[in-house]
Amino acid sequence: GQQLNQSPQSMFIQEGEDVSMNCTSSSIFNTWLWYKQDPGEGPVLLIALYKAGELTSNGRLTAQFGITRKDSFLNISASIPSDVGIYFCAGQQTQGGSEKLVFGKGTKLTVNP
Amino acid sequence: DAGVIQSPRHEVTEMGQEVTLRCKPISGHNSLFWYRQTMMRGLELLIYFNNNVPIDDSGMPEDRFSAKMPNASFSTLKIQPSEPRDSAVYFCASSLGSGFNQPQHFGDGTRLSIL
Image 1 (cartoon, rainbow over the protein chains, first blue to last red):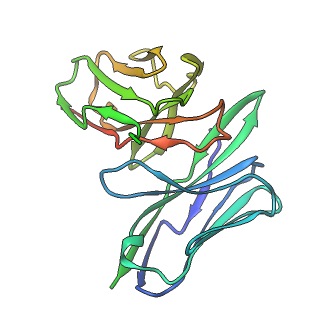
Image 2: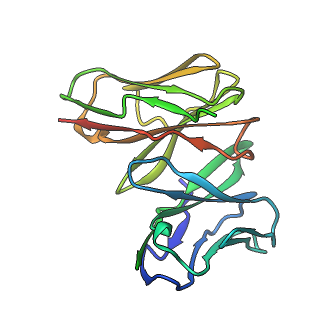
């Protein structure tokens, strides 16, 4: 199936630092979503992007829908310990007349206080 | 508001046994999704329903897996017979509308271990 390349796989940062992660693909997507998953819980939606070039913020989080529709990035500014978790991108596309949703493998974020 | 409710939270069983996972979507949501999460393959969509009708089950691994949605407030994912390679966390999610354009709300998952 279609793959999303999410990078980096893991990050170890100091509290207060900014973080950037991204997802790329060889295919075009109609929607990009960013989720965060805490241990033992399901993913929680952080930001949804619906238009190429769209830049959306949610508190200290900012995400952009790439202009080519093949990529997206998520930035976290001034990280805090509770930002720890796994961040997933997901892309929605139409294949053969049906809709598909594909997830990246995740970026595991560790924040040292 | 109650979120998506999944049960059981944990299940440990021997291979060959039948496993049934349950999900109650958020009231008013008309799309329901079943996912499997493993370290190797990440999150994979197994099947999704819209208005209780299965729309796309192309992600269901094989005939041992089946899913039903008898009404708007309940769905099951069944594995029979179970195998060790089925061990994973299974998530249910629901959303308003159809397809994937609406944000999905996930349950806390069922951690399944097949011995």
